[in-house]
Image (cartoon, rainbow over all chains, first blue to last red; front, side):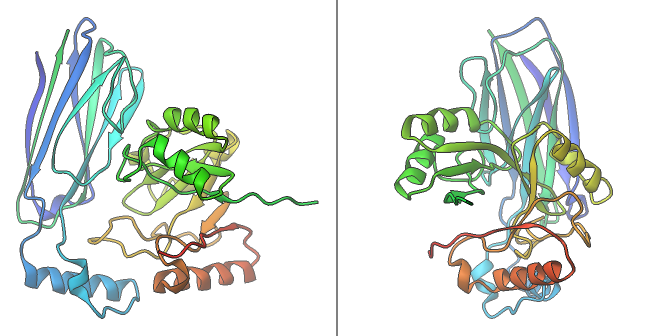
Length: 145
Length: 179
C-alpha cells in the first residue's frame, strides 16, 4: 500500500533547505519501503563549475591550483526518517536513486530496525547542494505485511 | 600516571558514506593497533550496535557517536545522548545544543574545521561563527588522508594555536597515518 507519493521540483535557490513530508501509517504493517530518486546528480556546466570551484577556494583562503580535480560538482540530497516514536535514521550518501527497507528484523544501512508503528511518520528531504537549474525529486513510501 | 590509548575518533561505515561494514571497521581498527574507536556516521546511529558487538569480539572499545552533518559545519558527538535532530541545529542554537549534550555526558568536537565547504562539501568547513567554542571538548586539527601535508590542516593548526593562545581549552584530535 502506498502511503506517500510525492514529487518536488527544486531550483538552485532551494539549496540548504529541509522539506518535511508527513504521512500516516495504519494498523501496524510489517515493513516499509522507501523509493527515493533525484535527477540530475551531476552539475553538467563545466565552465560554471570551474568558476564556482575557484570562487569557493578563494572564499576559504585556499590556493586553487587544479580546479579540475574537484569535478564534477554534484547535487546532493539526503533523507532522514522519523517514526511516531522517534528518529529511525538517515541515508546520507551520494547515490541519487535508492530503495530502503525498514522493518523490525531487517533495515537498510543508515536506518535502525524498528516496528512500523501506527501513526504519523515523517521523511525530511534535505538539500545539501543544488546547483542545477532544476532538480526533480521523487519519493514513494509503501508499507505491507 | 597518565596512560595513553591509541584511538580513532572519527569514522564512517556503509551506514553513511563510508566503505567499511561495522564489522570490518572493528577488525581493521584492531589490525591497526587501535584500542578505541568511535563510530561517527553522518546523521545516523544505525551502525553502532553491530560495531559494538564486533568490537567486543575482537577486543577494542567502541564509543557510540555521530557526526552531525549540518549545513553550517560538521560536529562529532561522542557518547551521551545522540538523539538530537541534526536538521534543527543552527548557528543560533548551537551553544545551547552543545550544553545539552554535555549535560547528558557527551563530548562535542569540531570536525575538519577548514575543509572546503559549499558547493564542494556543504558544511565541510566550520561556519558556526564561534569565538571561544563554549562547551566544546575537542577540535579536529588533522583529518583525512596525508594529514601532515594538507593545506587545510595547516590552517586548522594555526587556528588551534590561536585558540590556545587565547586560553580556549579544547583537546586536539589528529591522525598520524599517511595516505
